[in-house]
Image 1 (cartoon, rainbow, N blue to C red):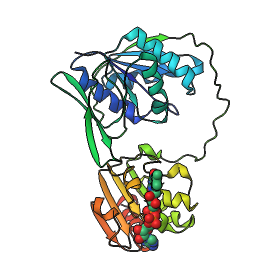
Image 2: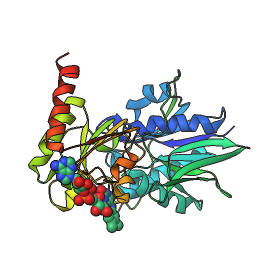
Image 3: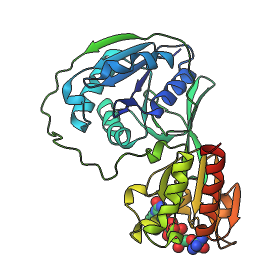
Image 4: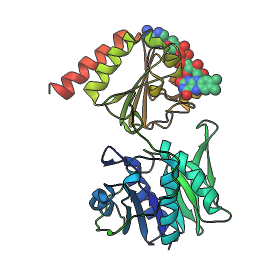
Length: 322
Ligand code: FAD
């Protein structure tokens, strides 16, 4: 039995999906041990019910106002304080921008190792084993800690969240945050509204084949009908057809939706690194030799400006006008 600490992450008042997925991962490796979650900020106690429903036994709600917005300084102090109190036997954090920023600092402070970008976890012969992609997702390796407690960041959309029944015990606390060097005065968002690309279940992605910023319009229409988000290759971003916040790939976002539709994307290895774990990949490309077809479950050889509107029309009939 192991006591596992899970660092939760919320966005605009809602827990991110990866939090619930980490609780499932924690359940697997705890082998019946206690699962402790830590929440942050003035809304820290808002998530008690859902965390209990997904298997959390105890919640440490750190309610300092300074934690309403993420800063490395404040979160690392708060999290270290909770870790000291809980004395966990394994720690899981989300492999999000926040988790990736915070985890190495926590590892350094605790003097332990860190296994990042984990897509699966299980216990084998008493050891906690973490699976993670290597070589841009071409292969997977299994890793375990040889010393110190298991500590990992978990990639979202890989470990299914499993609902259980339960009510978590809540411990509210404030921590004495010292010498904070960063104050966030304002957050300016580049993109407004819409579905978060990294959490979307359906992604419609455009490459250099869309040919212009306007070329993304048919893709957005399809995304609207399917309730998905629009992404892009770096080729499309470099050509200034869209913002870099949409870039998927090795140097962009990693997405693992249920459905990924690649439109006018050749399928370079760096792009595949960000989407090849999608459950179903559909490729639309007019070049039958395009490498994207090698990873696609369904391929449509054709002009995206003809195919995408036809798909939108058909999905519209089935989903919207049914
Ligand atoms: P192209 O390779 O130019 O492909 C365009 C495709 O559109 C072609 O296959 C063509 O047949 C098709 N097409 C054209 N017109 C139509 C039409 N009307 N209908 C249908 N199909 C059409 N790339 C990423 O995407 N993400 C990354 O994170 C990333 N990181 C990188 C990091 C490094 C260090 C390096 C060196 C490169 C990286 N790249 C990345 C770039 C990558 O190597 C490719 O250059 C890029 O992915 C190509 O984008 P593309 O597929 O949109 O363009």
